[in-house]
Length: 180
Image (cartoon, rainbow, N blue to C red; front, side, top):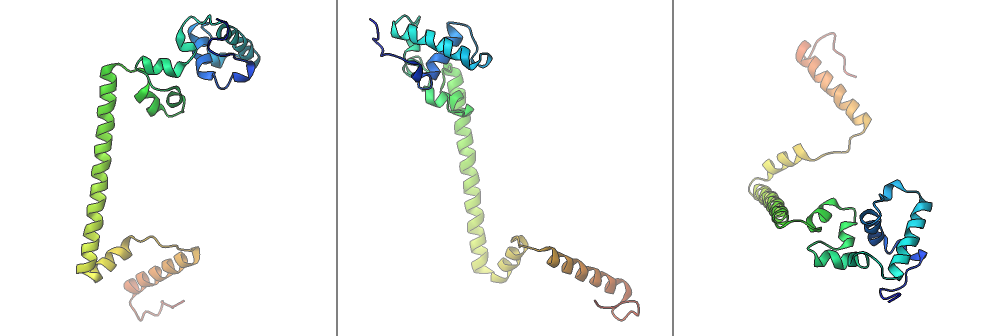
């Protein structure tokens, strides 16, 4: 029976990390975050020994992905991908939780579709406005198009605004007013 599931060596640590982590937590009661690299190697040597002699307490430690799929969970790569939404949606949920997650995902998809439809409608309205009233469209377009302004152009605008305000206050031909 030795090697019935294949032979593991210390070089297989990264390829068997999900199974090893599960075994370490479930069988040995050790959290992966609380051990040093040296202890990790020691524990993995024991894992390899149990693997090679086919003395694992459960079949899931030989192929966690296969075991998860058979028991209503997702695949290991999705669960360990770092995407919590994917892991939540696919890993061992009860029927009610799966249904709730599906409903939530459906609602989000519908909301995205409504948003896309609104944007498309606004685009069509802008195109209609452009074809009916070119001048109105240009005014609307000029209001909302961001421009690249430099410090000098902003200073000129401010100076121009100050001059306009001064003319309004003091009059066009005031003796105190000088053009710069």
